Length: 422
Image 1 (cartoon, rainbow, N blue to C red):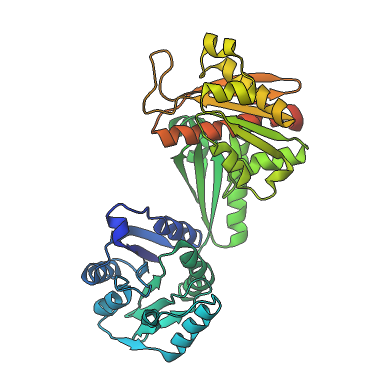
Image 2 (image 1 turned 180 degrees about the vertical axis):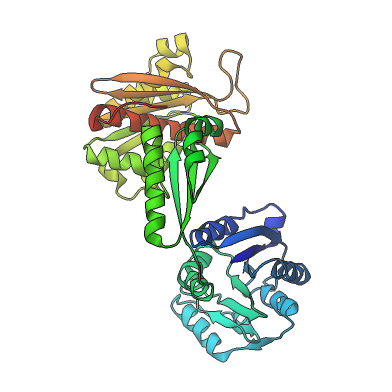
């Protein structure tokens, strides 16, 4: 089955919001073996939406529209579906009662305008919301489908998983089984990873491999096809073992695993505690760590020492270190790591200092220069990095590198599974 995605919202076409719904839908339905051939964003305009729906239906089996199902005057997706399909909107009293029930759980008055959501295109099936109040829509015409979902990501994701995926599975019987497996790596670049595994990729059958770059990581995305799930699982497993054997600890996680999740598990497993001293990352690393539920088991706290006074007063970084080596240096990163470990009484301290840009660089210390120090009772060392990209990208890469440095330290000294194979 091949389909297209239309995301509705003037905030998207004006660049005021980022479209996250289309990639989410493509990824999830790709795991089911369904192919998205195009993403389109259109403003809150009936004719633009209707024209895009008609075009998409002419190029595939169906279209998934997100956004424009709310109660306000700019929510016009229902009207656009009718214009494209040549039908009318019909009021559904039973759907109005469902919406009233949804609002009743919020203990807030129901605005009269909300009843706009109780209208459906003639012949359409409503998808009852479990989150929010906007019903989704499934309309079939001439062996094609139009699916309309709310634009709020959480509402859309719930409907996609619990209503749309089962409906598509039942409607489009697949001759093959599909499985996607993502290997998340800390390879230096797409080119270096391609060079390292190119011969393996060329030798694989019934499996396609994509190499994609993200800030701080390079992903190997494996898509396998076969006559049934058992065979597909075996194809994926055999390929994965080859990549693991070749890359070793460069692979830090799989599928949805994040570096902070992996590091958290290693800290907990080895009964280690952590504290952070951050300068250029401004608390981003602490945020990543505390995004993981239960991180209080191993994370003691952090200090954002953005200027030299904070480094001196909060972390006991000496004037001599700062004057002789500068705030962005291996010596300062080590002193920050030691200072924060002493301050919180943790087993390990990490110190991050650098120049995120876009200003502040010099010939000797360019924008993107970052030092990360690690302090443990028995070991202290620092790593030097030069990252390229915007200020946000440099900060993201720095945070990821700090967590990866910690991951390797634990693997080398507590897990006993070998060192850096990059």
